[in-house]
Length: 122
Image (cartoon, rainbow, N blue to C red; front, top):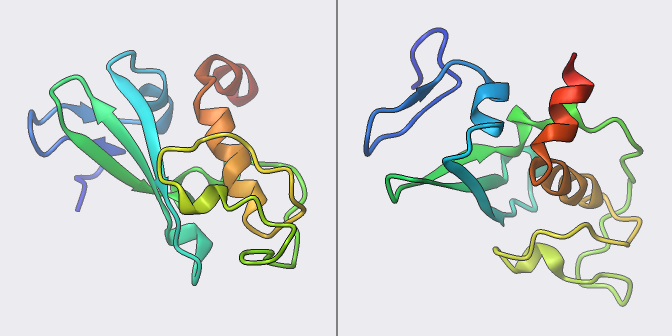
């Protein structure tokens, strides 16, 4: 469990980020993957590499408030309309389907452009 006032702490080198913004904008952090949780989407994991060679995981719910668009009701996983992007951990592009999971893909896209997030947060 993270200490009070800490957004995330690296278990390898003990680097701490006191806020989500500092974490997202750290040049030593790279978004590398997404591990879907199809039962509870917010429990899926975004995967980040740190310069110390560790991989950090953070639940989708820690970033969910960044998304302000529509969240579709129907999950299209396994249908003909599904692109199956969520099944590929390192595929980070947005999904064109009007699927319940699509908003997570949009957050992935946002996290790859932290300068846009910083402007929105102000």
